Image 1 (tube, rainbow, N blue to C red):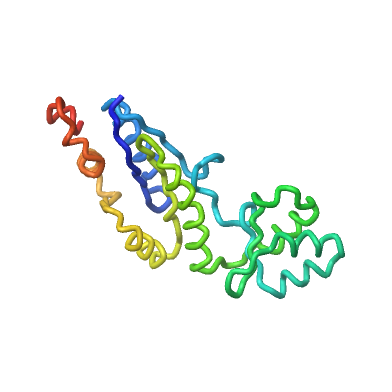
Image 2: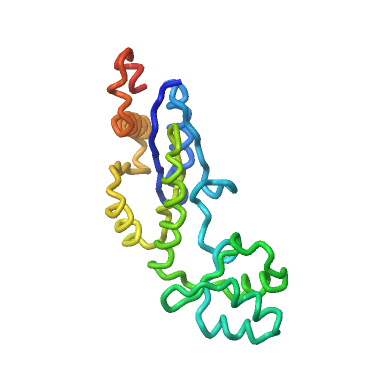
Length: 208
């Protein structure tokens, strides 16, 4: 296996082909004898993709937090021990508190449904996931499907890309030129990972 380290993220709206593209990149890299791990969206043990949502991170307004805490002394103690203030809202990260009473978890999920997660909170939670992953200096190439930039807020995505200084390729979809786009993606990935600089490969082996 070739010693190549890197990260490739495939983003896109539902139905745009991100799953097909990410699987294709991973398969092609494996054919190039590159050690690769493909992580599909929502994979349970993904290194950074733990979605912000009622089942992962509950976001509560102060009024909702106090209302839940007032329901019972036991609930108040458990909730206030787990809640973290972030600006004007409160977060309960359930993975950090696996011993929360099931009844409280159920109430938290109910209370959080329909709550809009502020953009700064979403960005901060993404950053929290990135830090430990980067600190491990992961080996090989990771191909991530729609992680962690999937956001309905295009401005948030643009700010994240700019902040991370990511080399980016935008591929149009729906024009029937999939073969051309697939080649463009492979060229981009090969350049991004430095595969074209590997000695002993012919041009056809460098980019299929």
